[in-house]
Image (cartoon, rainbow, N blue to C red; front, top):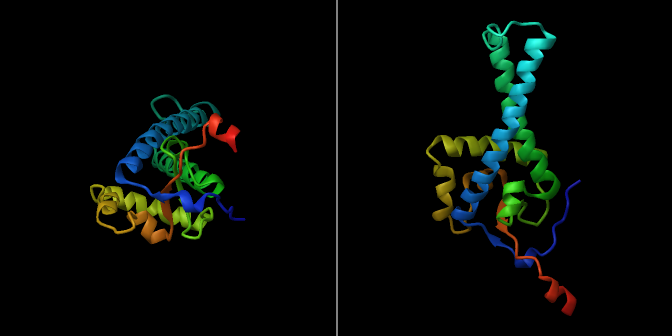
Length: 165
């Protein structure tokens, strides 16, 4: 079930700088996840399947399964974060949120489209993200293709402001 976000009148389209900042933060998280997945994969092949140290990673099966696990782990990191709360940890640091134009959390299908389009956007030297500079609504290719928006959330109210309310 899609979650309806609040403060929809107080958000605005994300700039390229904020998006890149969040991407750097999330990149570090993805690397950490990939290290953990790789360690688990190597341990499985080495200790459960009994391969010697020289054999680990030498077969087509082990290479393909590791690559598949790395892609799937990155997809699930982003898709789970986007569908649950609209943001990854890097996006939280930059106060960004992915949502539908109506203000709902995105679906798993939209997440899959966003991920695939993000890879294409990066593969063409980041053109899909530079597109934000030319689009009137500051949408990247993943936003356009998946029918979503990346927005900046307002700063949370300080304790003093909350006390006045």
